[in-house]
Amino acid sequence: MYKTQGFIAVTAVLGYVLFQFAIRIGVHRTTVFPHFPGPCRSLPGIEYGSEDVETLPDGQAFISSGFKHNNKAAIFLFNFEQPDNPPIKLDIKGFPLGNLEPLGISIYVSDLGDIYLYVVNVKSPMNATIEKFQYDKAGLVHIKTLWDPNMGSINDIKVVGNDQFYYTNFNTFSTMIHDFWISNLWMKSVCFFNGKKSEVVVYGLRLANGINASPDGKHIILAEMGERSLNVYTRNSDNSLTKTDQLYIDCSPDNIDIDNTGDIWVGCFPSLTDLFPSPPSGAPVLKAQVLKFELQNGKLVNGKQILQDDRTTLKGSTIAVKYKEALLVGSHTNLAYCKLE
Ligand SMILES: [Ca+2]
Ligand SMILES: [Ca+2]
Image 1 (cartoon, rainbow, N blue to C red):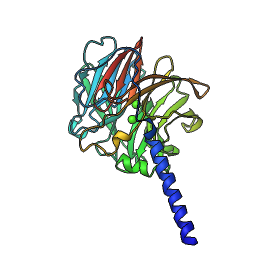
Image 2: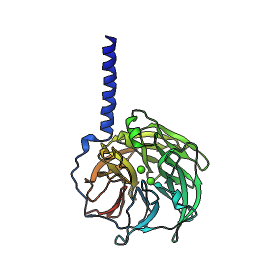
Image 3: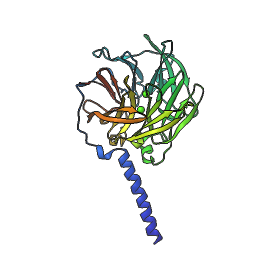
Image 4: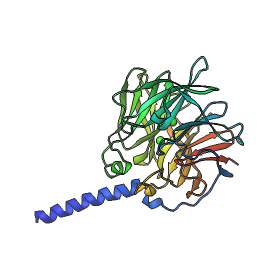
């Protein structure tokens, strides 16, 4: 009797875990029907991915490249105002490229107009660092490395002041498959670094991925990839965060961009089944989906699907950045430029 009850209980728990795993990797969304907002093309020169993209107000876009590609780290610059020119690889001074594997990035422009690029460096995946560079026309000059004991497998960063930023801790384990299998545990966090040290400001997240802030700096938007949700938080005066919304979007969100009108653009993956098993080398090629939202009173509203692809033109969608009537869509293998018509 007790053996039978025990067997039923174990089977029920295993079934629940398997069901949750299947939903979280999107096994129900392996078929996608491509549609685009206008013509899209792969930009030349980006062979090793474009995990994250962030744009200056004048249309210059920084691109982090080389994630999951051995010793191919690079930061590119693309000018939305001259879209026929390919992205250029920036010279990096003061930091050995062999020690760099860039993931999330964030721009900070000082009151004097100096441009700084903060780069998540996952060369040591479970002990990531933040590398601060200054940009000028000659390229990037390394300023300093920022690190704190709360930093683990950082995924993305949003700078809100000089050396002040929010960052996400993504993985608990060294491979994503372990995190998904054990994703019934909520173990990941958002932290705030105040220039000297960091504090956990949100705990209990499943795969905290992209992070960004509203143009007025009052709200933080987070991609909780393992929940397939977007979370909105109000920033308090002490930089702690209070959740105001959690929107389930039935795709696995990666990075988030916010355009100059305040609209929120999300690079998303309908299904992660192509990650399992992980490719023996190089980066995975995933199906693509881009969503757009408006933020009103701390809530995400008026959601729209902008595009979807089955890996023909778009090899995934880690980020979508809008500038005027054009869109850059990043992936782990290429970078696509789409016109919005
Ligand atoms: Ca970012
Ligand atoms: Ca990311």
